[in-house]
Length: 176
Length: 426
Figure 1 (cartoon, each protein chain N blue to C red):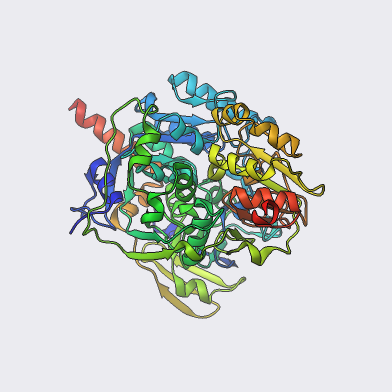
Figure 2: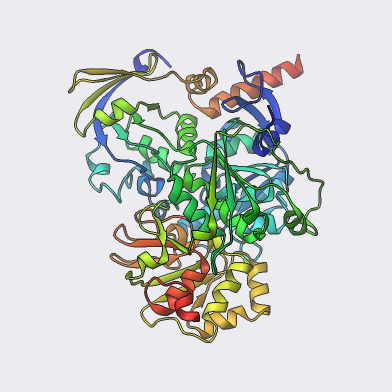
């Protein structure tokens, strides 16, 4: 990951508490599994305008327990496929949190930044330092850094490239 | 300091502590070996694509990789047929003995315990959030996404964070018609849908000691609806009797230490808990049935991984026997597995349902997640023994789902509005 793509900038789409994976991507679309297909229906049941109006780099901001419900990885895939650069929330449901990290969708916990932001604000997110700046409000927020192991997965680009490296390392050790 | 049931099972499966996490206490990140890796027809396709990217030829152990076609099977359309076909091809290539297709399949979380594939002390990961159901057997079981499952299928290992445990102690006397579903809805109503976020729930107390396995599966199933990573029960004579005759390998029973460290202990006197119903659009909106009596319904669904077991069908049949489903209600009964279906048939329950004007479906997740077999139109309402009542969960974004146990669902189907069982049986 170069330094450039650790700085994200985008317009806020603000949602409330307990945004569940059924509204992020309704189950009627789970007969599809690519990010491009799923993105067309992202947030459809709570915000039918989202999928058409979202721009590359935009940021979804949620309240508490974002991504609760089903384990469907289709949810972060749909968000990523829609061009969203990052999700910020007061807290995340644990399966969604894992899934986002595993597929390389940046995800940050910041109760203050999440509560203050409203739809249309512009945010600048520095993934390296974990800082979030709301340019509309002129406020900067600090988030707690990821544990080192999680950071390794993020830096590898997700769980699959991370595991590939582990598997190769193990194979090299065995043949040595 | 002692350890909880969940901590002990995880500790037994640790292969590697992460740097900086030497011990095993809540918050530690650990690498664990898994006993069962589960996926289904909607989560397997993504997992298989990721598995391929890993460049690993074979799954780590074909006998530990379980696949069930249950969400959109028997296939509802061409796309879901393609997903099942992809899973079927992989299962054949890899020689997976526990790939369950139409004819053998059932709703995964009813099926795996029934087949003895999950046993006490196991560590199970599944690409389905309701994998936590197996906590009823004294196993540590948790839902993950498809990429995690791909890695577990390839390596037999996965990382996890050791969760804090919340202990729930149920005391008092159960009121008539109150079962596991009412207890878990009431509990989620108390703590909220993120009340156990990232934590493990442990269900204990004299009421739990007397609860059937079906009731325990129902409670563990909905731990995720409180945000929990797992929901566990200690193994006792009831568990052992259930597992006897199903287990074809050794298993280990763990129990929490008396001095185990709990993040929180919540005591619930069930004597004051009447049958519950959770109002739209969150499972935490649990209320006594009496408070929802004015709600008319268009559909009643009895089944799912939450309440699709024989005990659930027996309760529903006891209310529907000799009575008739209201003419404005579609009542859909879905036995959880082929075995449940056959047992219900032999016991005469299927006849009871059909005579009452209900339809009986082959096992499938179908309507629970708005897949098929009972989708709601705009403005329609269903009472359902399933586990989620999120907006649009069973169909149109403007439809509504009211969660209940089988007794309330059956009674409501007869009356045409949400009703307690005593309203029809009195």
